[in-house]
Amino acid sequence: MTDIKCVVDNAQAALEEGFPDKALAILNSSSIGDCKDVLFLKGEIYFKMEKWGDALNHFSAFHDHFPADTRAESYIKMIQNILGFFHRDLYNP
Image 1: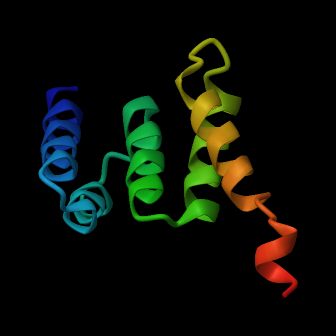
Image 2: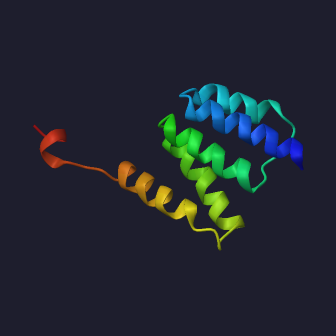
């Protein structure tokens, strides 16, 4: 269990330092699978990278597997607002 925590902590540190690609590489290179912390952290990484589809998929999977943990709900709402944005005056000159 400490191996998972160590990998997650290293990836979290890389994300906080501003290296989301490195954080994702750390998570993908390990063979820890998608546990609760890994699934949520991957969603945060993709959110930071503005890869909305991947972020939404990870946060939705997190929410499906762990419905009692409500951390992903706000991310899901934010992503849906970003993807649903439409401003008629900007897109129809």
